[in-house]
Image (cartoon, rainbow, N blue to C red; front, top):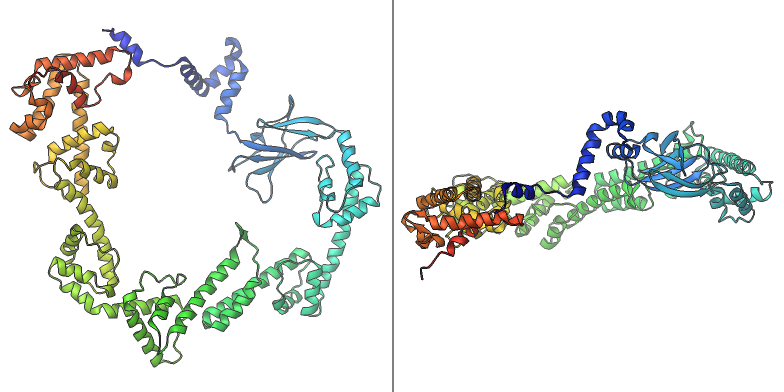
Length: 638
């Protein structure tokens, strides 16, 4: 047998690389301040300090880098960050460190930033930001090539050429491509500065021209002239049919100065006019009002597009859909209403009344609707709430006698029959015997007033019946079905202690649970909480048996550990113990109410052998059954 020291050495074995990793991680995080001061005295390398500092410092993970101007680098992060500062970026050009002086989030993005750095004019090489590299070339040769390329540019290519980072041109407007082309072709533009001046001249002329177009919109003499001026200014989202409201809004506004001002007015008028017609449709609830609103909505475009969805337009369409379906209900309500038509209208997905509309009450819906029309020839529903009230009141009226039947039922079967009457419209009523019993026992003394009351009762009773069913399965399980009963129970009512066991350990823990609670040895469980606690106690008890066996340091301790378990079994099974526990059916193992010394010796010797070999996984017995195996070899009884 190996020495205790040898065994202990095996238990504490750890690979050298893992030891070094955890040693230095611990050292770096907790002792950097002290050792950094003295690092040169003890020969500690600065590189190690930098590595550990990188572990504890916030690092922004960059996925792409691009020099977009002479003084701007665009970087995209792996994920959006709550806060970003210049110090979060480590920038270098080759071996030269570069200081970031400003950081700005790129408009319309969540994780792309523009970093301001000293000019890269005349330089080339590899720019590195937080370990991600990007090559650039801003040398004079590249600049000359970019200038030359402009000479052969077309209207289609000139914007891309002007945006070449080496040119560093600002305020390039893609809408002015043709104008830039014409100005550059007719100008002397052999330097970066001259090209910028050409762009600036075009922009200035365009601004002046836009201002003239803005003035034309402001000074329009009527809706027709206004539409022409709006087209000339390239205003978006205009709707020809509401030109007059545009004219009124613009002619009465004295603070219009820019194209953006006009665009804002157009968008505001669009929303206001559509809103007015949708509200009108909701008030009138007629096919004509819906059609009028829909005609304008068809040409409407909102200003907020999310995932290719026009948010405002979708909201207006949803409101109109509700009105359309209310109109459909009204169209089916008359003295000659067809049951199927009214039922279909009431079951519209848009109205969302499916949970309360009872198909069996279709005739009642028609009767009540016809009565309303007879009393008022102009009757119609105008809101979903009105229709909901109508349905609920009709259901209650139709169910009055059925509710009485539920309240008067005096047997389990009569109660169940009353609950399943189609006109009550109840859902999730189960014919499972356990559920039927719970319905009757919990509902026989209640008085219901509406179908909704009964539905609420059924829903609550189902939860109680579900619990009762699992508890009942445990209470009535036999030794052959207890494993299935416990397994089903744990699937629904999680038991951490049980789930943490291995499959074989679970079976033995269930055996302990069975010894404690099977075959009428204890009062029947009444709640799932009681079952769960008893199962947890059984796991703890079983684990104690196994731990006691595995903790033995000599034969006497092992014998005592087994006898504790056997004593508990005897309390449960009495004289039937040997017939219940297979291994204890033989006198070589069990005699006079105790494990034999020979059996205990065999088991302990196996335990010691397990502890002495080079396999750590078998140092302990995994199950009680495994512990019995060495003793089983002593059996000589035929």
